[in-house]
Image (cartoon, rainbow, N blue to C red; front, side, top):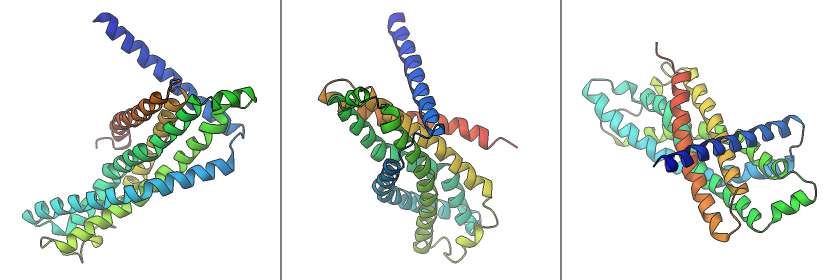
Length: 256
């Protein structure tokens, strides 16, 4: 048992060290001007186009569910006029950043891991090294920057879609007037709540990019290893997003 636990501990620190080194290499490449802008724009378009429809569907239905429950509970205490603010608060604080990043991890993150894993299996990455091209600068850095830019943007759009979904449910629900739904948001929703959610999404985007690219670059030399690396990319990203969300919530929203 101790041997098994020891292996897991060593594997954890090895994984942490490798991902940290990959993050440092990306920062070094970004600061030294090694970013390929054309590839980066292509990756930004890919992440945005592939993830936006699923994120929109996820957020609109989540907003409708939250609006439905909030309308029923608020009507019991005469607080129907605050349902819009309640939905917006929940979306901007927690659901927006977390759910949208789950979608991006499952859609764009898995695609990045599969693409790099396939390049590893077919020895294209070794060919880049043979041509004196750093695979991190050429392959990982554009995806890193694309996630850094597009994930916060998608989260902001997701927040708006989620609040709008709550409005749709307010129109259909007899417990709240849709006329007062949006009127409760400007006076109660603080700007810091929206900003903090965007800051969370920046960290989540970095997690998705680093985890997905690391899994692709360290993929085993077999076709079935690509599928395993893709699965690990999604699972690890979701687990790390959960942990980072807890830590960032404590930091960004201190008690009192």
